[in-house]
Image 1 (cartoon, rainbow, N blue to C red):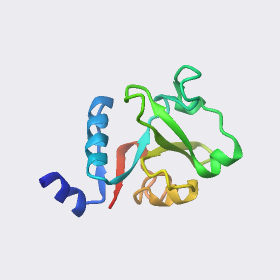
Image 2: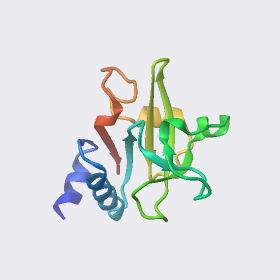
Image 3: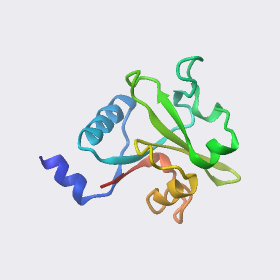
Length: 138
């Protein structure tokens, strides 16, 4: 499949898509058994309570020390009920925090997630916003 060849060749994709297009891209990536790291905007509605509470903005979630270090499982509003991703809160500077989701549930380090973000994203050299890219790992 042509898309699979593209995914094998390229590791980083710049995407400027709405939620519907992101959902379709994420489903396609997952169907190819690839891992992705995708930024979330601060106002994205998510649930970390397993359906016990209503959705809330990702930047208003409460984090304990373990979750800050290892991430937490969430559901993104608009995705199927059973679709969970792991969310990391990456403090880029004292003035900026990025939120990154992945389907890689073996990832248990916020620092490693920060390092996985493409160069120039998530606070690395270049200073560009993480919201502009998704990173794929083979």
